[in-house]
Length: 352
Image (cartoon, rainbow, N blue to C red; front, side, top):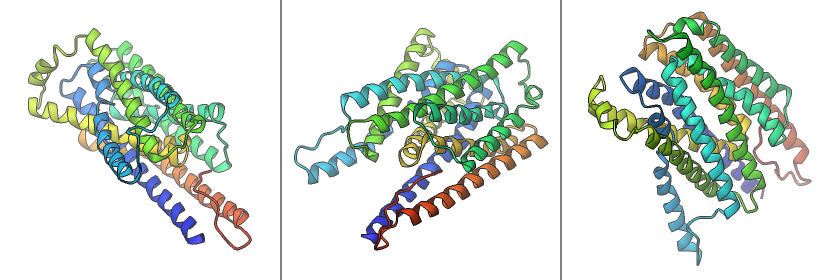
């Protein structure tokens, strides 16, 4: 029994690490590729927002494979596992995601990548909402992590106005700044609602159900942005925008596809980390990726590397290491307390 339980914990840790990797891929590559779209002539905010979640059909592949496997072993297996309540909650959160995606795209259109990294403030909002909505318990380690990562985000904003894109007015710049912070708050709230959905679901929550929830959320988020595209007449100008794209129409469509795929990695990673750990840990993982993105922005977009960016990276790494060390220490203590009389390990994966 001890071997089986330990193996289960190891498997969960592997899946948690895989989802963290997906978050890293999405949050390091995502801002860069979205900014690339705007730098070379892309101007459609609603279209860009739609691309953030438009990769949802990819999720049909693992879901169909899972259904095929269930059908081969279980008579009368259902194609979708979620009940009506979970479906409606996922749809509502999806609309919030759609609005957040639009606001995020608007901010990325107005701000350089490094300044847009102020979206790391979503960690603060996520921590507050996690405390209020899902009663997240904080330790000295997790509080220290939130403070350090937030400090890193604040440092990024110290010289934000000096990196303003050429020809952009004060109103445009600061509207992008405020919009990005608003998007961060809305995103943090949405992720917390995802965790609440898991907790309140009146059915067994498995990773298969997690993928279904992501599918529904991204579908409704995409539908929300498509409505905005119809109102803004985006569909009529996409082909013209592709022809006028500075690096060519083929690369335009390549950028568009990459945005959809990379951002889908983000959402899959986030809902997976929330399932295996918590919304707070997903926010911490996301915030850790942001300073890495700013360093890549220096390389690819020739943005200035100021000392503040190095300090931000240092604080972020320090905060993440603090969180991991605290998690290891807390888990070790809980394992000792929860060992059965025969030494059987009973504690599941947990984070501080």
